[in-house]
Length: 453
Image (cartoon, rainbow, N blue to C red):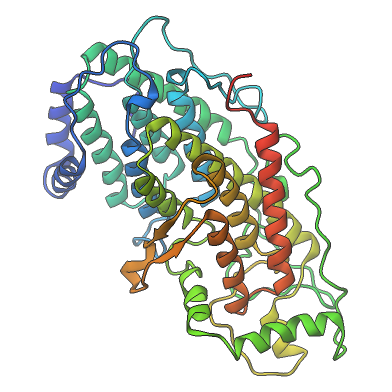
């Protein structure tokens, strides 16, 4: 999964490399991926735009990335924060094909400290799907250095399978130029990503005190230093302020007591569908930390049958939103440090009670599911529309039936409420989290201009 060549060899060398690298089991992976790639013999011609390509290259890389984010992982493998993977891959995908989108502009000068991107050769043709393929292959290698051998082989296999197809659609010079451009975009984006503050992660020692959050698992608390991370969008947190929970109190009938009692009471009267929501959106096992949105984007793009330009817009906007939403949400969590319902109900209310799903190991307020899903829903709505109907079947491998929605906002609302039904969040934390996520989304859409003026 999650070596690297700077220069693309010719088709003959690719075939030789394929034999050397993917004999035995890797060859089988290549054969399967190649069969799944749609070969179009259509001549790409000269100076073709990004919208002449389908979203297939994005969808296939999302599917490979999803495997790297899935938990439990292969033995010995490590994963990457889903919000970083989505953000930087989405940005790299967009920049790798943006020159083929005449009405659009680079994110240079807009995102915080974002470097200048390479320029294309004037008057020269580019195969934009090949550029995206090269960029996404490079980004996934760099972002997932701890990937299992099987997933690293999947990255290599998909890059070669798609490259082999694109070699049938354009001439060798155009293909090599396109690949070189995509790889250079990825190189610059990853170098920028490496300085985002995520590497700051010393052991976190929870603060003891009356009414202060206590860890709910023996593992290290999740993302305790989000405040150290760079915001992708300058000013994205402007106005993104929500009222904190009521003052901590152990008094029966106090606002805090009633907030916890609401969670307990709802847990005793769940409908079958409410329980199904909680279990489906627990994302562990599955895709924790927002990783579920990687396969969701793949499924949504497949349903929409978008062209490549629209796919990279959705990917970039969604990635930026999830990164900044998670940064803002987790920063607030470790400032407010609200205790989880399971702690309060057991220790204060004196009730032997367990949640329907595992409680994440970070403070309660606000709900990350609510904040993240609301911000992402705004981005997908911006690209695909307010009344986009779709279904997700991510967890059919766990035996869960698909879930269907009339809009992205409806999906976000369900994801938010599922955390109350699961017993891990107070209702107010989810309701306020939705508002916060939407505010983050509004700020991004107002501050970042993809379209030229």
